[in-house]
Length: 90
Image 1 (cartoon, one colour):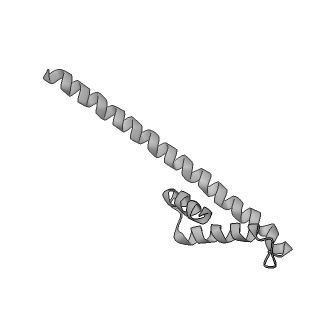
Image 2 (cartoon, rainbow, N blue to C red):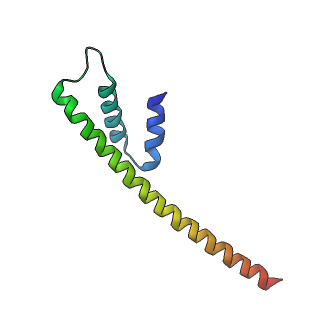
Image 3 (cartoon, rainbow, N blue to C red):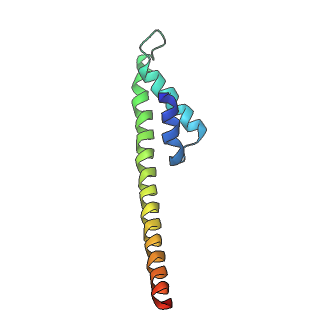
């Protein structure tokens, strides 16, 4: 279930299936406390790899915020224009 939520959250941010798989593999390795737990060298690399995903997520969220702001401005312009037309037609 948690894996599906990761995928659902990554998809709107434009991550590829390959990137989704990579992130899931990273989190799996970090969470693995059993016999297959990562060796020290790998364990040192995993947080940096995870950090790159966190940075990419922040950057992609900022792009989406900018797009949303522009879309809201456009919608407001259309509302004003429609109101002007409706006022002129009355």
